[in-house]
Amino acid sequence: MIETRLLRYFLTIAREQNITKAAEALHVTQSTLSKQMMELEDRLRKQLLIRGKRRVTLTEEGQFLRKQAQEIMELMDKTESAFLSGDSIVGGDVYLGCAETQAMSEIAAVFQSIHAEYPRVQFHIFSGDAEAVMERLDKGLLDIGILQDPAVYERFEYTRLRLKDVFGLLMPRDCALAQKKAVTLDDLEGLPLIFSQQTHHGPSRTEWFGRRYEQYRIVATYNLLYNATHLVEQGIGYAFCLDGLTDTKNRNLTFRPFVPPLEAGLVAVSKKYQPFSPAAKVFMERLKEAFL
Image 1: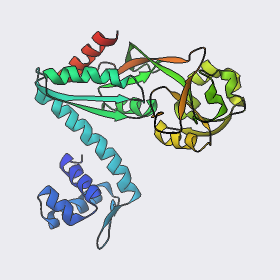
Image 2: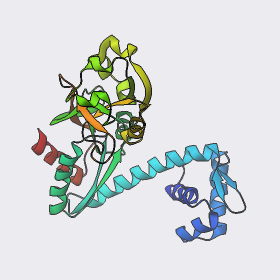
Image 3: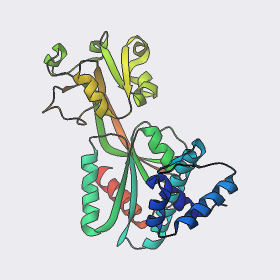
């Protein structure tokens, strides 16, 4: 079994890209650190580091180990924090994952209420699409995820919240379609469209669009919206997205909702049978109080 100390050493080298700087950061000698890394490579029977004159880079196996080691150390730190907090939430950590949502402004109010009472509680927010959040929940790296309904994973607990996301179309402010106050699905026909990867591959695709989705002219997909807004601004396409996620006041952009409305409820997701730290437990309780 690899010692966590060696993983920390390896991650420091990967970060610093230099044995000497890593040794200084770890308060060990350069020779000790080099010896430890050679022993790690011998144990794994793989070369992890390419040792240049001025810079250390990772091999493909080293890059794989870095990803795994980061997750292991995050889980170790999260576990240690939960034990150190004991039964008190004088301090502690809450690990939250969420997709892009305007509801974060309301969830932040829950953060604020907890932080006002327990200023030593720290919130760690991971932003990503549903797949990335669910993966980190499954590995125990997150306490709670805030995602759009529907819930489809049996290994998780779901609490439906009184929060909704509203979908619409992001478009250039000076385009003809922007003259309308709302758009319909019929308006999408013939337009160059930009969809989120979650919609492109998820169950809402069939639920909302049916067979007509196959007829749409899709020119791009995106993971998170910010970069896609530049495509819209340049006239490359119209982005199917959520309301309130981008600045439409100071850019050549405007948002139009759909009529009839296209909405998705939000759920708080946690892994079944996973005990919460005291701080995470209080966050979940107050989330329910505010939004059930």
